[in-house]
Image 1 (cartoon, one colour):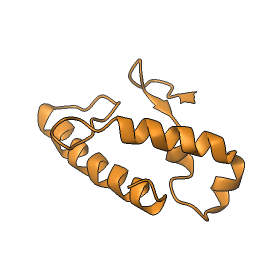
Image 2 (image 1 turned 30 degrees about the vertical axis):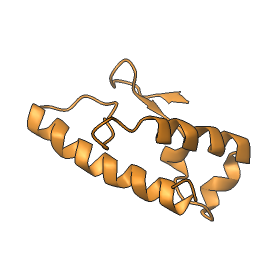
Image 3 (image 1 turned 180 degrees about the vertical axis):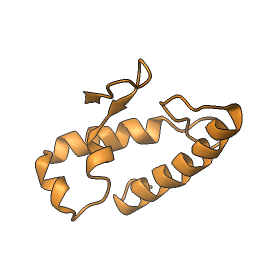
Length: 85
């Protein structure tokens, strides 16, 4: 994990941020076990209402809600394309 300089205290870049989909050239930078662990982390982040929360600060509550929708769709695509759904 890489801390995001100037970001929220708990804001990090993770393996799936760099290589979200199988077959991409960046995926070779990570051992399969690292990707599997990050997929488990991602799947475990689903909230009771079915969505995912973002781990970065937004400039308004409306922006937070908009980013949450985007991240939920992105998380579902990453999990699906990696065979984790």
